Length: 390
Image (cartoon, rainbow, N blue to C red; front, side):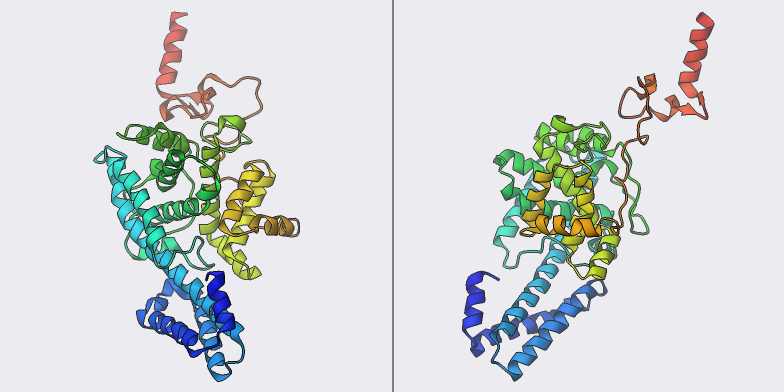
C-alpha cells in the first residue's frame, strides 16, 4: 500500500475506507481461490484480516486495525497474483521450451517477445504479483496439479524471471544487456529439459553438462545475441572457481553472468521445501530464510558480497543487513547442502598436471573414460594399436 494511502487510512476512520476493504474481502471470498489446497499457507493471513475487520466494526476507534487489514489483504492478493502469473507464464513458456529442444523453434524472437510482454504486464497490471512466495506455497506443486510438463523446471524459470525483473533496475545495466538477462533467466536450464514429466517433486541431481548444452542450443538460434549463450552457459559458475562446467572464476565471469548465477541459486533456495520449513519454524519470511542459506555461499567466496547485497536489498529493503546480523547465531543451525554438482566429475584431485582425458572441464564421452581402472572402448583399441606399432 502506498504511503499516501496508509496516511489516508490512519487519518480517516470513515465508513468509506472500511467499505473499500469490505469489498476486497467479499471479492476474495467469492473468488473461491483461497479454498485451493495448495494455498493453505494463506489461511492464517485471511483469518487474521477477517478478525481485525470485525474488531474494527465493533470498536472503530483504532485506525491502525484498518492499516493491518489492508496490509494482510495486500499480501494475500499479491500471492494470488503470483500464482496466476506463474500459471500463465508457464503455459506460454512450456511450448516454447519444447520447440527449442526439438528444433521446431529456430529463432529467439518469440522467447524475447515473451519476456518483453511479461515486463509490460507487470507495469500495467492492477495487482503486482509478489516477488517471493509465502512459506508453504509450492509453485511447482500448483503447476504439477495443473498438468504442466516439467512443473519444477517451469516454476524455477518463472520465479527466476520474477526475481530478475524485481532487481534489474538496481543493476545499472544498459537496456540490451538487461533484456537478454531476463530472457536468460527463463531458459537458464534449457539444457536439461525433459519431455516426460517426472512423477514426483523434489530436488534432483543436475546433469553437470547442462549449462554447456543449453548454451550450444541457444547459440544456434536466429536473432539471438551471443550474450544469451554466454550467460546460460555460466549460470552455475562461481567466482571462487567452485562452479561448473568450466570452473570459471574471478574476472572471467561478467557481472551479468554473476548476477544470473546468484539469482538461480537464490531461486533454488526459495523453492526448496526445507527453506519453507525453516521459515515457518522461526516465524520469518521466506526471503530471510533463503537469504541466510545463500549467505553461506557468499561467505565462502562463491558470490561477490556487494552484488549479493544489491540483489537481496532489491527484493526486501535492508534484507542483507538483517541476514548479516542473524547469520553468526544461525550458521550452525542452517540446514544446507553444498552446491548441487560442483563439477562434472566432482572436485579435481591434487595433481601437478591433469591427465589427457581430464584436460577439459567437461568430461569426455563415456566410451573414452576409465572403467574400473582400465581404459575401455575406442580408447582401449587405440592403445592396443599404438602398442602393436611400437
